[in-house]
Structures are given as C-alpha cells and as structure tokens.
Length: 516
Image (cartoon, rainbow, N blue to C red; front, side):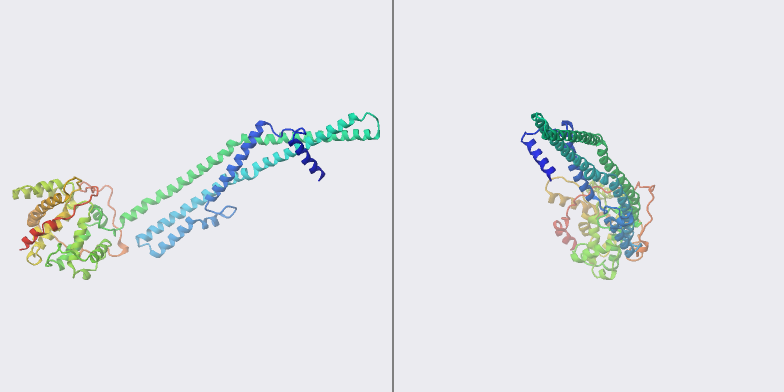
C-alpha cells in the first residue's frame, strides 16, 4: 500500500513538474506504438467481420458436422429428396437431382474453403489482434511502471544525498543516513538495470512488429488467393454440369410451342408440321368444316386460353372441343400470330408485296410461286399444309360462308407482317398492307393444287394431332447432330410488334358482299 502511495505521489510530482521524469520510449517507438494501436483496432474489426462471413460454425468441430449445418448442404438434400418424390422420369425430377448433386459438391468446396480461411487468415488475425499486440501493450504499461519506480528511487536517493551533505557532525543519525543512502543507491541501480533491460526487450518486440508488417499483410493476400481458388473450383463444378442440364432441357419434347420459333419447335419435337397446326387442322376436319364464320367468329376467351395451354403441354381433350370449332380455329390463328417470325417470313416480305402489286394474274401467280419456292423447308411444309387445308375448307363455302377471299382477310395478317418502324398514318398503312396480303393469300388458296401439286395427309400422327410421345417415359427426342445440314434453316429475325388485323374491321363490308 505504501509503495503504491509513493508511486502515485511520484506520478503527481512529475505531472506538476516537481520531479524529474524519464521518457518511457523514444520518439520513433512512440510512433510505432501509435501505429500498433491502430493496427489492433483494424485487425480486431476485420477479424470480427470475416468470422461473421463464415457459414460454418467456428471452432474445432468435426468437418462432417459443420458440413451438415451449411445452408447449401440443406438445400442439396432438399433438392435430392424432391427429385426422388417427382421421379427420374420427369424433367423437373432430373433437374432437381442434378442440381442437388451439384449443390452438395459446392457445399464440400465451401466447407474446405472456410477451413482454410479459418486456419490461414481468421486465426492469425485473432492471434495478432488479441494476443501479440495486447502483449506489447502490456509491456508498455509495465515499462511505464518501471520508469515510475526508477524515477521514484532516484528522487529518494537524491533526497538522502542532500540530507547526508547537510549532516556534518558524526553521529548516530548521520550513520543511519549513510546506510540509508547506500541502500537507496543499490535500489536505484537495480531499478535502472531493470528499466533498461525491459526497455530493450520492448523495443525489440516493437521493431519486430514493424518488420513483420509484410507478414501481417500477407494474411490478406492469402485471403484473396483462397477465395480465388474456391471460386475457380466452384466454377469448374458448375461448368461441368451445365452441358448435362442443357442437354436434358434440349432433349425434352414437351416444350411450349406458342411463341416459340417454328424451327426450334420442329427440331425438338422431331415433327414436320407444327403440333398446334396439325392438331387444330385435324380436329377442324372432323367437326368444323361446315361451321359458319370459321376463323371469323371470336371464341370464348377463357376456352381459347385453356385450349392454348393444353396444346402447349401436348395434352388435348378432343371430345371437349369438338363442339366448339371456333375455339379450335382461334387457337390456330393465335399460334400463327404469336410466331416470332411470320410463317411466310419477314425476309421475303418485299417479294410477296411486289408479287401482289402485279396486275396480270398469270404473272402474279408466277411471282407468288417464285416467292413460295424461296421459303425455308420448315416454313414451306407448314405453309403448304395450311393452304391445302384452307382450300379444302373452301369446298364447304356454301355452308361456312368462308370463301378464299374471306379466309385471306381473316388469316392473311397472321401469316405475313412487317417489322418496319416507318412513321406515318399507321391505320392507313396497315389497311393497305392487309389488302395486299389478301391479294397474296386468296389466289394461293384458289390455285392451291397448282402451287402445291398432289394430295396431302393431314392427320400425320393418326390421333387428331396428339403428340408422338404421350407419357413421360418417352419425353426425350434424339438430339440433332451438330453436323446436320442447316442450309434450309433460317434463324428468326428480331421480334417486332406485328400490325393488328385491321382488315377484319376495315373490310367487313367487302366480306359481307362476298358472302352475298
């Protein structure tokens, strides 16, 4: 207690300038000390945030136990279990199984990554922030105490020496003072030696800290290197599974057909005629050839939506729609209208329009035939199929009131349109275009046997256009060879907003005239 009191008194005397004060550290070491405090603050904060980034719990827990607690592992297990429920026969089941296996591999990479981060970065940062730097700071505080003790011993010694000089008479008191002075000199020498020894040790530790800054900085380089390696391995896992996933997707037959490119749909389904076209045509041949206003009368919106959805998934109840041919006709029109590229192709748009402007009918027919022959194989086959059906529908025009001209009016704008963004009176321009398209479609229907000689089998699949594969066990098509001759294929042009079929409204008078 007395020693502590003397230290406090010495500290107070130094503070008010009444006692000699020894500097604890040199100016250089004081700067090192300030930097050391900043480094501790930064590394402590970085360690805390980095540890929070680790998904696995820190500590000496077994790797397998850590892995089971990872969100990725839980997700992988959920996907694999879901795949087992759905079965390997479904596309979704296959995708879930592949993705589950992939997520499990990613989880293993993640746990390995976190182990390395914990070992090579987190733990060294903790050691630096919570052990090494605090030890140096404790040494600084201890050195400050040694300095205070040394200064206190010096002060007591100086006081004793002064007292000895004042006592000139040999006496018992003087003898005691000399003995005290001798003892204080010994204590002071011990304090000085202790101070310098400890100061040297602290200085060495502080300079070592400065020298090792490159080692401390290397922790962060290691962090980036481990992250880079982890992401490289994760990317390799993902890239290795992507081709398999894409192959399953591309081989799956049951893909939506509405809004999809004709070439893509035919390639995937291994068909010659688009499924919605064949399905609707074969059903109409059975139940709609004599229906008045076919393709002109609008069907129920809800029933049309349902039919399109059923065609999209390759399932159709023939009996349900046999009593509503207008819904079937509407579904066929919708398919043609929603094609990204018109069936008669945008590339040949000018050829068709120029042919329609020819007044001489024989020359017009020759020009139209030339344009037909330029169509890609897929477009040609489906266009021929559709025209042959429309010609057959025209045989019943006395009942259904659908002459070739009327069919051209309601179907023409769904077979050919332009992606042009030209400004001007849109209504007038669209009306003109619709009239030109009628001048294209009507003569082709009228002379269908001249354009497309020979008979055609409409029900190619033998069951009202139902898909070749009717169960999930057979939902994969053989993938086309990369070396397949694609000379007849044409990539679809950019999607554009097609003009509305104003012909139905603007030429209704002509329609009724032709109906008589």
